[in-house]
Image 1 (cartoon, rainbow, N blue to C red):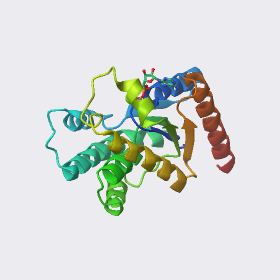
Image 2: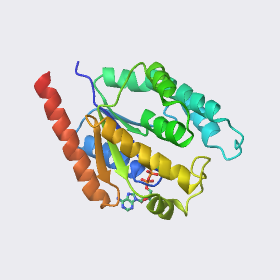
Image 3: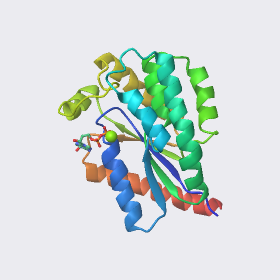
Length: 212
Ligand SMILES: Nc1ncnc2c1ncn2[C@@H]1O[C@H](COP(=O)(O)OP(=O)(O)O)[C@@H](O)[C@H]1O
Ligand SMILES: [Mg+2]
């Protein structure tokens, strides 16, 4: 059976990941594509419990190392029990954030050793890599405008400098992994972004079918 496409959405808070995840799910639904929608941290019962610990504002004293390992623990459960089985069954997987967020937040912004993080990623994901990653790029000012009305979680409460580092690292990653990354201006109209996303997926699927 053909493997499904693994699609991830990345970017700073408020860039439109949830909006586009939903739009893509609607597109797949309309076209009768088999798919699942999921998110990180979370996606499974155990992973969602770890998510609560990670995002809880009461957990201010969490060490960066603890944070990194919790993200990875959540990810290995999610990847092993949900993402890989779905892809193997031929379902497309749409995931709101994945390991690039760890490289941006814990690697660049928290300044943890990225070589070590790369090893942990490989271990926790069973070497699973997204086929397509959409980076919805907006400025930190735009992010703050968009999320100021919603309650901030532990990560969102970080400083402007922290979020600048995260944004820059996403752009670096898009450069480094240009074979799977598509960078989209997140200030474009949601419907236009959605059309770009659908078009890129169509192209990827056409290319995939030709090589199989
Ligand atoms: N392309 C866009 N242009 C303007 N506002 C947007 C766009 N996409 C999303 N938004 C709005 O920005 C806010 C954050 O969007 P959301 O999809 O929740 O972002 P994220 O999941 O990345 O945090 C929401 O109020 C949403 O309606
Ligand atoms: Mg969201």
